[in-house]
Image (cartoon, rainbow, N blue to C red; front, top):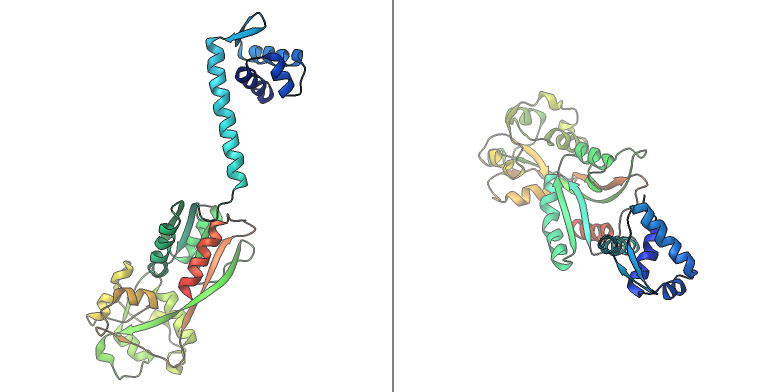
Amino acid sequence: MLNNQWLSTFKTLVELGHFTQTAEKLFMTQPGVSQHIKKLENSFGCNLIKKIGKSFELTEEGKLVYEYSKKLFKDELSLLESLKTDDPFGGECYLSCSGSMALKIYSPILDLQNKYSNLIIQLEAAPNDKILKDIEKGSIDLGIVTDTPSRNIFDYKKIGSEPLLLILPKRYKGKIITADLLRECGLVSHPDAKMYLSLYLEQVDNSSLKNIDIESIPIVSYVNQLAQIPLPVSKGIGFTILPLSAIESFGKKGSYLIDTPEKIVAENLYLVQKKRRILPARYKTLETTIRATLK
């Protein structure tokens, strides 16, 4: 293991070219400087300098060691500067959220990157359970989920909510939404369908839907491509349930029916990170953009 103090003395000697000046700069004695150089030479097993009177010349090995010492101390200085500077507008951010939420926040995030060219945001779309697993193992720093996670593992805070919408084929226009109607229609399922439907039925102000068994609703189609989920409904095949942002991204208004209950049904959104993890300042910049978008 190299002794950095000896290496620093050697680097200073080479740059000043004089033992006395080196001693003065480092607050050492001249014999102390010579001792450091000799110990460094012994650790390398070769001569680094060749004395010529009161001066010296570097050996070929000495030149290599000097170049190494410059790079080493330059890298060390760079590291120290990086540790001191917590740039709120630079560095990488790792964020994960649902596919529908990604549709909503991706464009504002890109605007943020355009504004701050040193800021790089890695966005991944994933279901709640994967988001939490990735945060726990450290591959993702920040996530947006719809369920409150364990306080023993995560720190989280509510950052907003988003309406959940039940959409059906146009032929059901004017009809009362009942358990029998949903069973007749059938579910266009997707990775989050049962979670969304369970939340919807729990909150909706419709007594005929309160006690429906989700498992009793037949699945008439399944698709895991978010942008395609409303398509079967628009063609008259089944009903489904999605956050507002996902339905807005699909467009084609008028090709399906949106149920409009008296009480808006919404899912809460939570910003999650690993418990006691202190994130860099750039994540606060990202959070500010996310909150503004959801607001």
